[in-house]
Image (cartoon, rainbow, N blue to C red):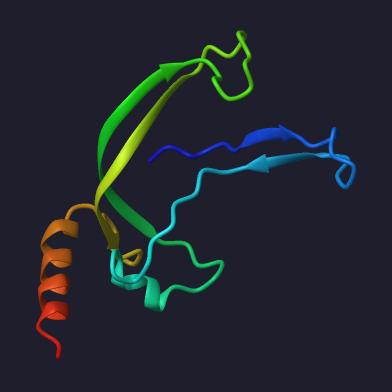
Length: 110
């Protein structure tokens, strides 16, 4: 996995803030999309697996009009989501099988 570095946002132009803030990429799910939301705790770290489809690619910073930003950016549509067991030595190895079983058990509850 790659560690994500947040983007530094200059807030010195705002009256209430006099420092730079680091903004991280975030995702939001409800419990219909991702049932594990019901068991989530603030501050808890988990491994979430996403299946995504790339829907756009661009270079540069189109939001701030900067011509010096040469970073490539991609936009993805999330098509599947799941969670790995953090206790496993190689959680990715058994993810598909375990998650399929967990989902099928959850769908049989009344």
